[in-house]
Length: 529
View 1 (cartoon, rainbow, N blue to C red):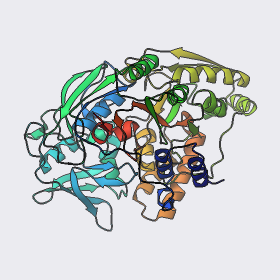
View 2: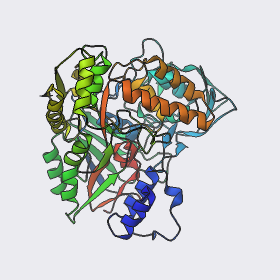
View 3: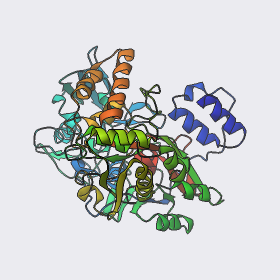
View 4: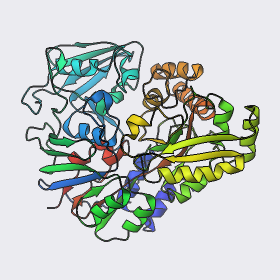
């Protein structure tokens, strides 16, 4: 049965809800195939103003900061998406739309883009947003001294200049078809400037004003009365709480201490679904779990060792025991079935201890001893997955020792530093974005320190290619190269699972490009009272 037919059958049998049907059809690129009359137009309450919304997330650290160049945790990305605006945004249906920009356009050669700004938009301090604010905000991510996670994208920009009274022109080194998508990243938010420098990180022009921020604990907000979008920002005030412990987070929801929780594990999701006072939302996404090895360090600098480890994890077992079926198998590359150029023809990697032993032999090893750092502060089940992986690896002659490390400070002290660790990515809307940020040789977030000349050459070529078929061929090859050479075990794609109390009104369509409705939950969701 085809994916769309399965969705139709599931909804007709009552196995999935109307909202789940629309969400999953959209994620698979099948929304346009929904036949008229199949779904009734009811069940979703109209949003109204008022209320105080409390959201709990697992992500957050005492090392968090408001410098947009260093937004490493989910909490700070959520915060930035709440108080700031980018030039563009990915809509819930997956399409790119203008946001702070009123429009954007290019000529026949997409190496030059013009963004026309909305007029009369004000920052929270009353300053009017100008082209200079855009230029200064984006320039911070360029240059040799930049420590930005978006540096690998913004260094492709040759210059950013004012173009008329209310527009900005960006010239690129080479054509980039997807460039406007990149500008939807929360770290590329537009900040107020003065004398050629960013004035404040905590002042934006977004839906809410930041009242307080305690890294690793909470952030609090009130509605921006001058927000330029009249159909958003429904609640009067809101707060995001970092609750790393899964049990404490779910107890907070059940007892009414919070209204929404994210990163619900699959077992808890099934249990919460039986609670009549709770709604569970399961969103198909590009989120994936990884175990990146530093390929600049032995023994991971040997691809036979990397392949042995990739063959030594039973992905089906992880999907069933850790995710309880709320996801799909990973194939050691970061492109999901929800992406446009997903290579469905690429053979799925299977658990094969005997082949893993062969690769160890090619590396000159009869056995292998490695340590894998993990923390449940990353995502529910991270440590359990590493323990399960260690059991799988024994059959390959690999002694894999799981190392539980503290939740707090994981992104600053473990990730990019330990030889092998657990990680996760929310995924990215385009193949270029995901590959450039996570796998290009020049990226500050290349978590496995992997360099492949053929891959990096294709990355630049595909970015400029306007022929859809040729572009697809290149992205297909890049997925294959990544699968067979990169330094990450990418074993599973996980759905975004959240839960909310009945007084929270969830929109008809929820974005899957990031957690929490694309980090736009606070301005898109509302409350009944």
